[in-house]
Amino acid sequence: ASRAIRHFSASSPYGSASPSTTESKVTVRTLAQMRQKGQKIACVTAYDHPSALHGEMAGADLLLVGDSAAMVVHGHDTTLPITLEEMVWHCKSVRRGAKRAMVVGDLPFGSYEASTTQAVHSAVRLMQKGGADAVKLEGGAPDRTKAAMAVVRAGCATMGHVGLTPQAVSTVGGFRPAARDAQAAEKVIDEALALQDAGCFSLVLECVPAAVAAAVTGALSIPTIGIGAGRYVDGQVLVYHDLVGMHSHPHHAKVAPRFCKQYAQVGPTVIEAIRNYCDEVRGQVFPHDKYAPYRIGEQDLEQFAESLARRGLHVAAEAAASASGMAANKEEHRKHGE
Image 1 (tube, rainbow, N blue to C red):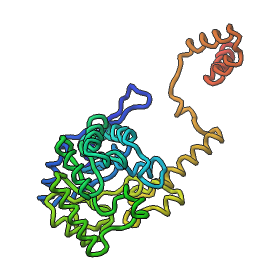
Image 2: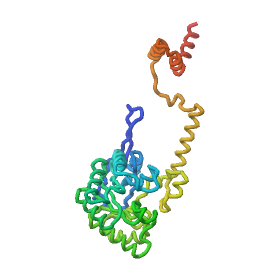
Image 3: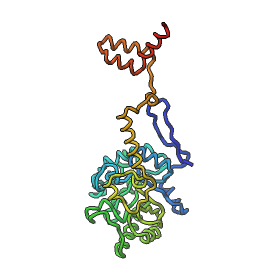
Image 4: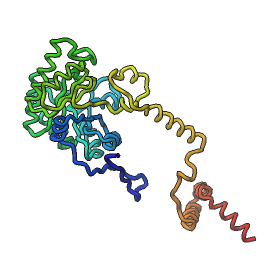
């Protein structure tokens, strides 16, 4: 059964949609309990109100407002260009669609590296202005764990992220899998433990061998969320656009991650729908009367047309009469009257 239902306002020409649910909101405590019970955590990225509604209505536990928005929404080749203010905007949009799911916002590149003061300021802004329930930062080096600790002490629930860290793409020369030798695997374990000690409530493991992810999960007492890290973790996260098959452009096909399973092919369906719409507009098929539901009373229309004519707007008056069928109605009345 669906965990949320949509409500539309009948009084609005467009309607509005908002999820409602009787289930309790997911919190840090909920995730800890899920790990203890062996219940897997389902996380999906969301970047706006529609994607948040989809995740919420599908029953996702976590909605990650990822800096991946730079790539899948803004069209950049990396996550680096997106700013804190843009992330605040994305979080605000997702927050309006998420009621049960926990919303975690990524701290973008350049928003927390300079100092612990900068990190706290950015985290507070993402939660206070963006409405996020928690924030996420990348990396487990000493300066990052120090930043994580400061953010936690400031009252912001914080998720860590180790393995492949996309914000470090320029220093490692691309999006490369992590922990593929013993030394690198030990480093991931050490960083994960350090982030846990810093107070992180959960940890993302990206693009590491399943055995390494299993070891990290076994070493920690906080939930682990894998992406391209195999099944031996406490939960999974995938990018919204990837899992629904949103993108159809050849460029995206070249950069789509190998670890992502596509559960639908929404992109081609969307393209076909828009193509059909364009064809119907050009062929004057759309909109027919069914999709022009608003009416003006016959007397009001006559008054309107007469007013236009008095103003010298004869073409406009004739157009209004023709569109409404007023001229045809008058001719029909005349014939019946003879």
